[in-house]
Length: 393
Ligand code: P1T
Image (cartoon, rainbow, N blue to C red; front, side, top):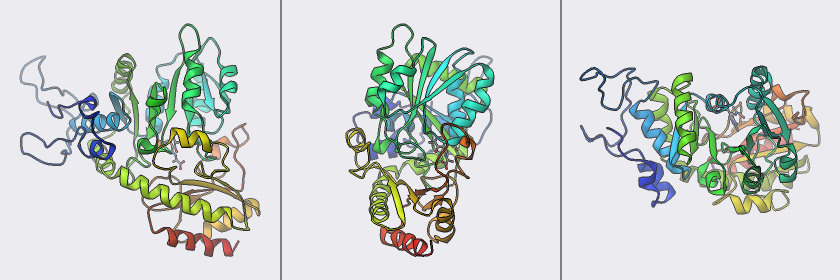
């Protein structure tokens, strides 16, 4: 059965090696060096009740299996599952809960995550409490006997707040009886910069649309865990609920993964350069980047993240929402668009774009907040672009 390896087979290898090889051995029949796109919905069965490991592509597909092995390997986990989008991955995980269950959620998360929890899943009897995840005491106080899940992002979207994953995991582990699972949305960091399972998390989630894919050409999601029982329940739900990626999307994500290490180094260097430029600019009131020593989460980020702090930078301008609008409409290399994590730089105003659905809630973001996804162009060109745009603010 192809692919025949597991994430554990590659555990002794370095990150960049795993990104290129885990799940991606040459295909045995032809020697194809790249995992083929198995564009098929179904598989011939040699006899009733027998098959070659694949019977239907919602259940399993070799291109998706290769991606799942690679994803698990990169997160330092045993088991990976790929989904049609980040939201599909999150929905599949939340389907393990039942009416009356309670979830503690960070008070700064992707707007679509809030929308799913607050506008949809609440109607099914799930309860959500939003807390500052950078304060483990606040997390401990929010936990109830019915809490089954603690959901956090770090760094967060869009305020770049940092949570101490280990401290939150310790809160979960100190709960008696059925303890809550800790799930980390690792989209902003990517596994190259941060591996939550190593810090005590039970699950990692990704919008692989972002850094994992890396080229703004595919939408996808992922879940990774080391817990076999949890994996089996998630795999059952993946198949039962059906939010799987197609083979071509899985292939595009695999292609992106191969350069993740190099890209994250470049994103981190450019993110740092842009953060340093913005923090000295007279029109900028506040810069949010976990790699700046004055960031409240810097010490935790330094301990928990490796090789850099990523390419996401947010800032507030003195001129508020009007200044933000002028800035995002004047940049030329930074494209005004939702999403993040691609090789090209993007800029947006979360309050009216990615986080419009948190308006009026406790998670509301400042109207004048600008979020930058710093790409891997030349840093000097990116700074020059921001400079000319800010000159017009
Ligand atoms: O878009 P999708 O692949 O479904 O992933 C949702 C998602 C989940 N978690 C985080 C941290 C995210 O940033 C996202 C998607 N975010 C954007 C589209 C954005 O521009 O912020």
